[in-house]
Length: 307
Ligand SMILES: Nc1ncnc2c1ncn2[C@@H]1O[C@H](COP(=O)(O)OP(=O)(O)OP(=O)(O)O)[C@@H](O)[C@H]1O
Image (cartoon, rainbow, N blue to C red; front, side, top):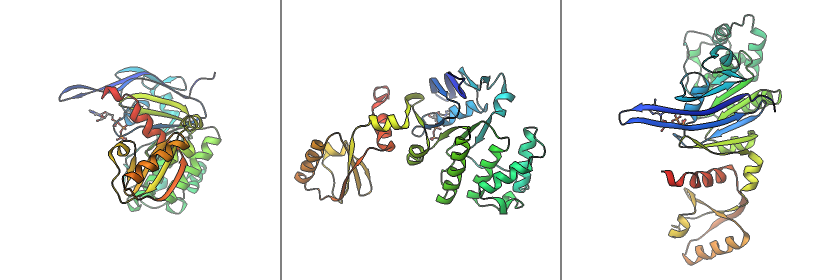
């Protein structure tokens, strides 16, 4: 098998806190294959940002190591960093640069001169061509986010790392971004994505890693993960309170209730329970489990005893 694009090897991370050491990552092992699109999912505080900060060389693992195409992110920092394009969560720019200057500056950081042809292509694909000469401070938040993506890609990195790139951005940018990233992935770039938008992960990622309280609790092809979750979901709307035994199983968002059902017989039982409790059900449907259902199930099961 060829060398992984990224290899996390027994990575642990402790943070000093007022109450002593806090362990954020526990012996994480994860290989990202060359050319794959891997989704790293986990609830708030699971350790995703810590893992990416270690990969980016911004934080040091307390133990273990991370290799980028065989280069250690600490010992061989420059070679590892050159291979990574990291789109960070937060927006930080020099407000006096124009968009093009910011991208030229970033190219210079990687020792690349005369990068204008690729910069033009990036601007075009990210819908920024008409902003090339605008000052960074004149751009909206969504436009700045596009520049962050362009900056991460100026040196055509083989590995693209996106840390919640679509948090709080509009549908148009999401579509532009995914179209472009998907194309780069098909051209051979490896992509690591963290996101809380499970629909995006389901649509884009070949493989999903799930992290819970600093441990990998699932690592599987997206399709196997979905087909292994053989259950269906009974979904309906209601204005009534559910009986306690169903409340424990259900995912409730406003008026929408979703309850896992393994077989057709279960649906009948559930409907019987609802009728008996006087719960009036509207817009009922039975659908296949999606990644969000799988995520909720795995997060509920995994490490339930180590809280
Ligand atoms: N500098 C720090 N000092 C102490 N604890 C920290 C520090 N950075 C992170 N943590 C803790 O480590 C754990 C993992 O945090 P991390 O930011 O990596 O999670 P995350 O999965 O990225 O979460 P989110 O989805 O909210 O961004 C959390 O419990 C967090 O409080």
